[in-house]
Length: 314
Image (cartoon, rainbow, N blue to C red; front, side, top):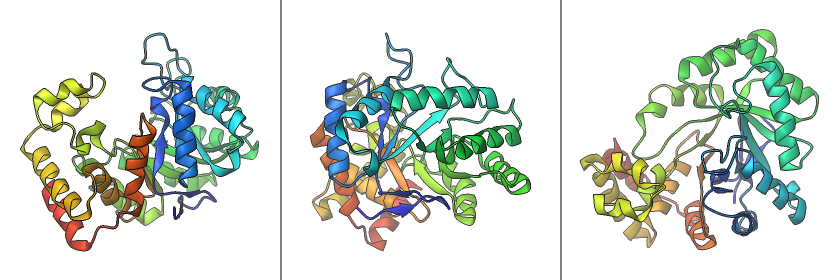
């Protein structure tokens, strides 16, 4: 897979990232190892996780995803082939972006991941209670200590992200090189209206989440009866079962048929083709499912097909 630079950092990212939220939740350790092997063997390199994954699962406390990734790295010898991305700020055990919490949290993540350095360390969400200068200075110290290579942010609004970039410039601090927003064919406005012009102007890498809208864009859910197919996803998908969502699925079906592809592959190929977007994040629970999603990286949509999808999803 052709790799793309991540902002102004030295990191290069393959056009599809693996979402580690499923590790320790919907897939066990053995399956996680199989999925990660298949991902790397196919040329993928960015593995995205967070300290809080997967604290929402009964019996879990958080840190499970990082722990599984760490065990995989230890036994597989593939550290040099991957870019490890994790996050701080949302875990109830270590909440917020104070300098003290960032320093403590990174040591926990390094220990669970069994690595000396995290490639991309992200603020999982904004923490308005801490001045941006303090947060960015704390991240800068981690870079100086060799614990982190680059920093990024997730779930920041455009005004706050622009402010963070301005603070970095003013005080000579490391800047957020990436942004992780929600973005897909049925959730476009939040990213495109204000964030996209900013990130393209500032050359920020974009690693978008909910790339398949919790599975809706796979085409698996087309009626309320289909929601019963997944207890985990059904509730999240329900909001897309409306005339707009069904119109998007119809456009995906048409483009997919022309390429002998699946709706999911087309939805991801549309994201990959978006100027300024580095890599969408996707998760899989079986190797077969992952191999299907990887097909998006070789699917080239022509301008008319992109325009058709743009119009249907506008």
